[in-house]
Length: 477
Image (cartoon, rainbow, N blue to C red; front, top):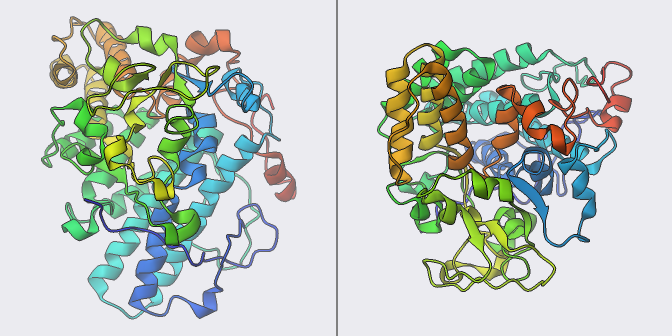
């Protein structure tokens, strides 16, 4: 069942740039002059970028700090005394010195650095030209994803299109608009080269649909609704479809199904050390039964589902229930809460404990349901309510709900935003959705969200210090 294992565990490719803020060195590094000479080097370096998708920074605590508990659908979890520092992200009291603020920043720059190693050095290798172009396109797609993460959380950041020829990494922040334009360029160029499918041995590599799907989401954030609509229509025409079984969709048996547009390939190989599998599921698993019990659903999320919506019970795992796969849910910590994220649940019968609970659980970054809702939102903004109703109803039908009752543009906007909340619950979309739609101050104000400040996180203090005065801090910090 497991796919090609996309990783690079024995080395990381680094550039000598002293103490600059993007120079985050990894263990087991190999100098550039001893690498990038063969086709195998090109493949291994590209796989190193993929491996970062399932890293601690991208799926563990740092990612959940900024995308998870900041919203109203996820809370700290575990027990009240465990990792109480996470509460700073729930009530918006974090500062530029917080480790989570710094950890997420560092992680994305590590990934971009790996990508730029490929983009700069692979073109020089004598190898199969078609494969070379494909690997560069894959890497541009991934680099765009990491920049998309940065710009949504921190705003404008420096743009590095490959390794700087002068070796200088201290430069001012580009504007958010410039970063978005760079992301669009990367995704457009990648989509022009990437294949639509791969053989079974290479599942997990990004495709044309991945690039266009992410591009449609980027356009939505840019409020370029015509391009979001047109691009999402291209993805819809590619043959993706909703998994008819919402539970199957998130189990290991549902990996890389018809709904998968951009999915992180995980697996378990203990010999790979820190790259062995992913802790995405372990961090969120049932407290002291399957995992650590963090980042759990809120009562507000529980109450957000309509009566009859099957997603409610298939998204929220509860103390005392027996899952469809036959596991009795029984927490091992009496002080922990009673609800957990069911989307990360891995049944005991298929779990591989040698790498920790749930290490085989793939991370779904972009699903076809999201594409349909992107298309619906963009169509509605353009005044095409018929197309918006058509696609929101497709998502609702899978949830065992009737057609939307919304008919006006304003009512449809609210219905689509609500549908995104319950369909994508706990998939790290809620907080950025609230910010981009202008709802954050209203929805999160009682938690401590301050308009004009908390739309963005602070640039980490050590990055400010290492910029030699070139970085300007975000407002309010």
